[in-house]
Length: 360
Image 1 (cartoon, rainbow, N blue to C red):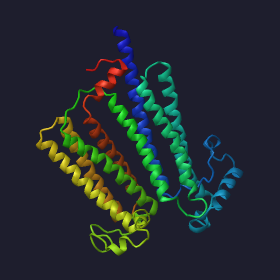
Image 2: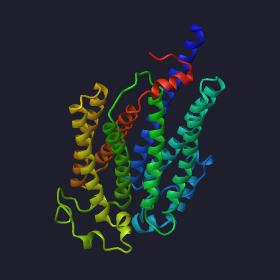
Image 3: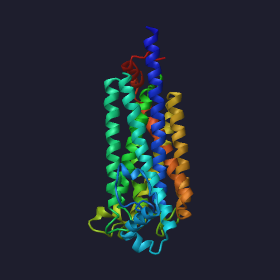
């Protein structure tokens, strides 16, 4: 009896490490995608070749052919006319690396997944969840090309709507993996008040909304304008006729650089306030020490993230600072996921029981 339990515990440990690796890969993918956006490299490859595209140009003739394809799109004609082949190679390598990492993530997920199923290491509920995650990964590849295609004919950049969709889908996949990983962890149930559960869930939702707004800011290059703080456009709250001059009014939430940056700022303030209130509630109610620690780390991370956001704005989006800002955003999201999942009492033990492993 001891040997089967030990074997299942070994399988569970391997699954956990695999999911940790996948979460790290997706975080790296988001950062490489951010660098690709900041260096204006995302439109350097104008074809979608899921298989053969894994190889870069291998001869001078192939490089020239790839460069000629780039010359045919508006971004080259309006922003990079006169670019040399060597300069093109720089932006090409960023986009190629981004796509190659995406392919590697697909393989790194699928092959171990199939192996774990062959070994009978996954219960049916976990298999269904992992198949959904894999399906979302396939959808992400299609959404990536849908995003790139928006900048190949009439625009000099990709659609900010599609960019935001691409980023949020990647982070949904990341969230699903981290949540699943937490469910497989060996820990006792954590009791929490209804109010703490609600605020942890609200924080997670608001973090996603803020990440969406951040993607709109990146897509519109809105961080390169209105580079003052705490004022924006001359006041803390801009005039309504500046915020909502486009018709219909709701288009301003996505297309107006002032409105997009303003809502990103306001959401940052709201997130910080809710995180602090969540921490105070955890302290006053004498919540479980794990909940208090989670609330403290989340509040500290949001403070750091807000500071980085202000500096990124004031210095007009230098690449390294912008990437650090994006990296800390992933840390904030991770902490929000862990805190929200921590409130679901008994789920960890129940998942381990499904795997047939004794908890504790």
